[in-house]
Length: 273
Image 1 (cartoon, rainbow, N blue to C red):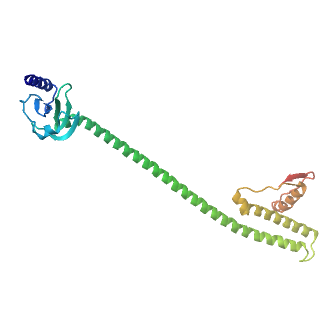
Image 2: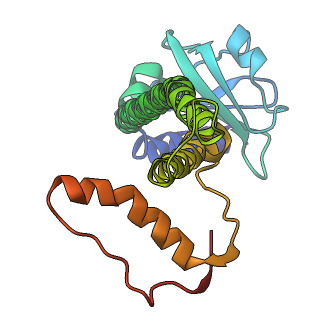
Image 3: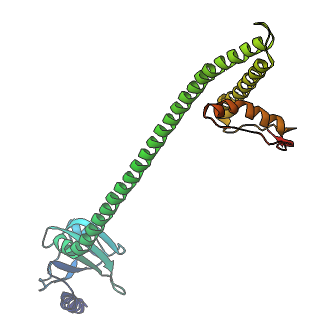
């Protein structure tokens, strides 16, 4: 029986050696934790009894398939990666040890690929962060420009309101004076007026009232701020308006040696503001 087991151990060693790479070792231990066979690439070593070695006591046939790292090879020494599994139908277990340098060489390709992937990922993240920063910076500049434009618009609106308020006072005051003095003269407080003088004063008074209404409409802050003017349509005789316009511009035409006449059939009832 012992001879058969030893033959099996040698057969195992010869067969396993063909599949091992330099630096790999494969052991067979029995249930008493004795080493009954060993295969090592490219040669096999003699049978040794390592039943008392701490490593053999640590990994025995009672253990299921297990993998460990950092264990010491009981025969060749050195830190290795350890894997063990029971041999089906026997009381033996197989232990495979591999030099960590061999493992490192085998996983160098994978690690290299992972390193490349990591560098690519880092590059993508850096580029993405740069693009996001550029977009945020551009958006921030746009917001600042918009805020600056809004401040300028608000400042211009305040200046406009102040200007219109001042102009309203500057224009309305002399117009009110003109209209007031026209009323005084038309009331006869300065003496008796001829028909021609009364006609001229009436024209002055009418022109002043018309100009004052225009100024009020233009400089009314509420209407300017609203961007519109309220229309108040009503029916009136267009003939009276045309005669008023004729009286207003006739002196200007006379100064240029021009004659301005109003047609007899001009006018009629219209609905206007």
